[in-house]
Image (cartoon, rainbow, N blue to C red; front, side, top):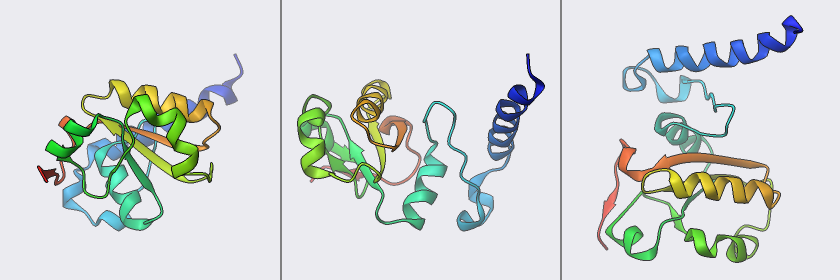
Length: 141
């Protein structure tokens, strides 16, 4: 196998490993590097930094309305997974928009990220589940 083909994944894995070695709370968030994994997943720390640096990023909650009302990430937009395919073009027509999706445990967000990619959205990241979100959430109304 070509050695050059092995170098790129090794660099990506090494970079991701280095990010996880450092505790994000102990350093300046704006100085932290963003390292999205090869499969399009993103960590809480990476997502919060991206959203702080770029207010045009859309955070989509693909859970149902009742789940969203009970607990949500500030600034998230509710588009339930079963409505995503029909609603996304009306809500976010620009396919170059950076979109981060989340759900409760990470199952629906993975499906949503795959669907958005199939629909032609170019910058889609899967945050996983809100139950693992370590930053503040809004409870209730």
